[in-house]
Length: 126
Image (tube, rainbow, N blue to C red; front, side, top):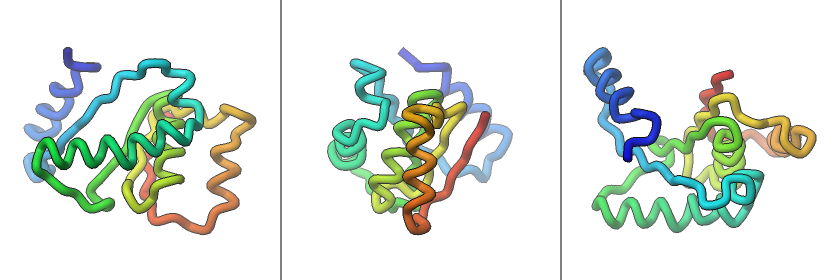
């Protein structure tokens, strides 16, 4: 199953912008979306530590954090930002589409505000 027809999005991007580097995209369908995506440190750790290692080992690739992006929409955007916050050594980029930054009285925004500047690039779409 192709989630959200993202393969078509990439094909169109590569056609329209041929200089764009090819990428590996990994989709993680949630088991329990609310439990996993609502600022769950265990899910963030699994993503940053276990999943990234499995992808690199399985596909025989490695990537620097500057080339690795975590992204998501809605609650997925929330957990993407949170995972980037907790693991800036693993992810250098965060893409958040209509992220649920309102969750827990905007606590993710407060977390970033209290932290020293992280080496993360953000792409935010609302």
